[in-house]
Length: 388
Picture 1 (cartoon, rainbow, N blue to C red):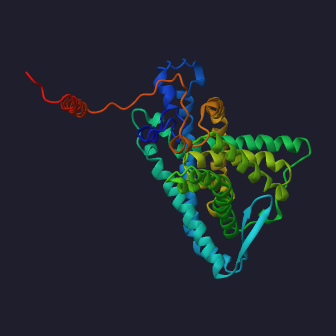
Picture 2 (cartoon, rainbow, N blue to C red; picture 1 turned 30 degrees about the horizontal axis):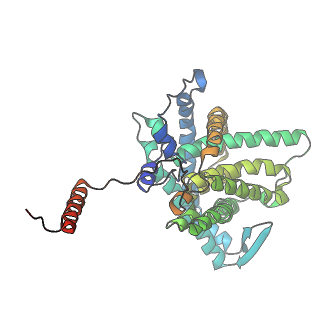
């Protein structure tokens, strides 16, 4: 299915769309085959309608998160005044590079809160179709980050609960770190906002966006640095770094949570990595924020609200699993036809087979006629003056 970037990529002469991976060459060669009729409840048009309640719940969670952040902002600033913060990146282990205290810690939380709220607002802006009911509503919302957050967050949480239950049955229960026990609202708000923002910077920007941007710079792509913030679309290279960053993201949680946590966190890594690749950093931070903020809702708004939110997210997440699997298998089938990178078509001359006819651009008719007249005049001059 074509996306918003397809027309721009065609105009630039790309063979593939850099966002959705659409192969323009195949599009031109073979007429589009009629879609196979889907029967029953597993028809995609029906399954997409089940995502709407999840989108509404996620929207409510976004608003609740902003309210809690703003209402308890001053209390968290007072808490941060006595906290020591270590800034880090992760690669084969945590690498601490800066320590903040006092006012430095307070400025750090202001940065986290501003980024988190800005990401929520950006996702809402990119998902404007959510607020425009009418003809083709689900075809339009299917392309928005809010739709994919609604589809992914609940479904991934449901799968994580299933995996957690399995490990508990075999005696490998996931351990909760001591620092997450007996949380106050101020501490929970700081810890989970930091997790949503800083972990996405460390794992999605540095371990995913940065390598893709480096490849873009090597290919002399003008907008390569924009890849740091995601939204560059699928390619074989991007999927490789998606897997790489997700595996490291999961390993980073093993020391504190135990081995079982690897298998749940890697699903979250795939979720955040996918929306980062497709929509950008703001969508990844939102997914991470909603995924982690249940404790903040419990302490900041109330157990009843948080319980209903969790029940709604996970309940509709179970109902959305068929659509998640359907879209996942459909996407996996397209991987083989994806470009190696999002840049190579524009940056590298693609070899043409000897038996492939090469089309040359037609010259304007006026220029052809003018050129022909000049050739005739040259021939007459070379023959000299005519004699009777």
